[in-house]
Length: 158
Image (cartoon, rainbow, N blue to C red):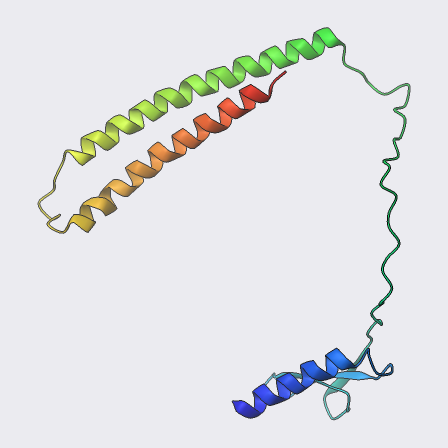
């Protein structure tokens, strides 16, 4: 194992110092067992790699100004009344979803409370009780996350 580690470290060293030296050739070698090594010396089963030199000059900064492309004159536009109607429809849909999720949350909480009150004969180990209750708790948490997300969407509406 140690010789392979040393060979690997040596290969990494060679790859690291190659750009600092001259443009040396690097070969990828695969042995009969499928182990891959990299070297600057070619041998049987090696293929030469084409490596691009690493630039040490920083890239030219990109202009921070945003170039705005004008909207074509024939581009479809939505009137403000249509947009308000769409926003109102979206709000109504989200509020319906919120109402459904709140009902689902209450149902999930009720089911969890029922299950917490039940103690089965094979559950002498408390971990078994926790394992049985886990899906019910997950369901409550999922509905709460859905409610939070819907409320966030409603708050983001205009």
